[in-house]
Each structure stands twice: as structure tokens, then as C-alpha cells.
Length: 242
Ligand SMILES: *Cc1c(COP(=O)(O)O)cnc(C)c1O
Image (cartoon, rainbow, N blue to C red; front, side, top):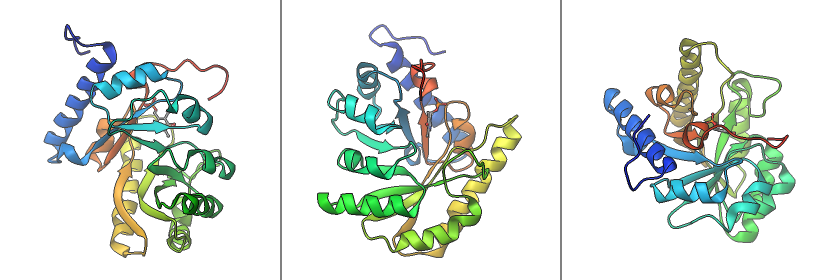
């Protein structure tokens, strides 16, 4: 672990540590650290600690639940900070969050795309979205399976109020790094292949993969946005629900 500097709190020291690790990994694999965004995943973390991370340079927050976002939103420092929605999103919650987030990373159905279009039309904005890919085709997980992805992209391409900017995924729980790397490289391949297809309204600018346990590995495999909760804020204390 990083030693705290005298003037630095624990969260700030951790932000510095993670930022350094990302930079080292980028150097090793010949990538520009500017091409990898660090997201602080804030679920269950009180606003004051999130603000500490912002004070230490974090500029991107990831929110999982509409209700939690609404309850903490006013307390967040917002200078230059973007919020992305990363949790499963029910269509009836889109209205509550559409004006507060700059990206929805969990786009996984056509009805959701249409509802985002509808709510964003009221706000006079377009929403950047990532398509959530269920890379392990797990029955219990949301996201579009790799097999269904081409057709889904075709359909979403004609929904006016959204711009698809890339892919997001939470791979299955893995036994080892080799298995993880297989999922990451499949995702990277999808990302590159779709980018080459030049579909209207669909560009592949961001590949959001990698969390606390595997973000460095994800970066080696082309991730451009890592979503980090536990490694930044410590273990979450759940009050009986996620
Ligand atoms: C909770 C969560 C994360 C962060 O997970 P950690 O293992 O705590 O880093 C990343 N992405 C999504 C979608 C999450 O729900």
C-alpha cells in the first residue's frame, strides 16, 4: 500500500496509487494513460468520501441505482465531474436520472433505448450510451449476448435520441487470469469489429471493462475505462440489498 503523505487522506492516497498503477501498466503495454479513464464507483459510499476522491483528481463517477444517485446528487462536488449510470436501469427510472448523467453504460434493451430517447427529447439533449454486453451469456445477468449484438445494434442505430459510444461488460466470475483474459480479448475483438462496420449512430470510442480485481489486466487488453469501487473506497457494507 501507498504511504499517506502528511497532507493526504486515505482516499486521496489510494487515488494516487491507482493512478500510478494505471500509468505504469500503460507504459508497459505502450498505451497512452490519457486513453484510460478512471471511474470511481460510488455505490454505498457516502458523498463526503466520494468528494474526497474528487478532491484527489477523480473526474468520473459511476452510479448503480437511481434512488441512491438522487439521494447523494446534491451533495457531490460537481466541478468538472461527470456521472455515468452503470447499473441495470428500469425504463420507469430513466426520467429521474436523464438530466444528471452524461452517459448510460448499461443500455441493454430496445424499450430502454426508446425511453431514453423520449426523456432526452424533453431535455433537448442526446444521451451517450454504451451497450452492456453479457459476454458470458449468463442467464442471471443483464446485457446483450454477443450473438444478439449485431441485431441489437442495427435496431438501436435508428433510435434518434441516443449515440452509442462503445461497450461495457462485467465478465463472469473467473477462476484465474487466463480465463479473465479470454473474456477481455473477446470483448476487445467485438469492440474493434463493430467499430469497423461503420453503423449510423454507433461509434466505438469507449470500452468499459475492468474492476477492482482486474483493471490492470483489462487495460492490457484494451480497456479505455476502468470502473473501480472496492479498491478505492474499501469493502462495501450492504444494508441487506445492493
Ligand atoms: C460495483 C460495480 C463495479 C465496481 O466493482 P469493484 O469490484 O468494487 O471495483 C464496477 N462496475 C459495476 C457495473 C458495478 O456494479
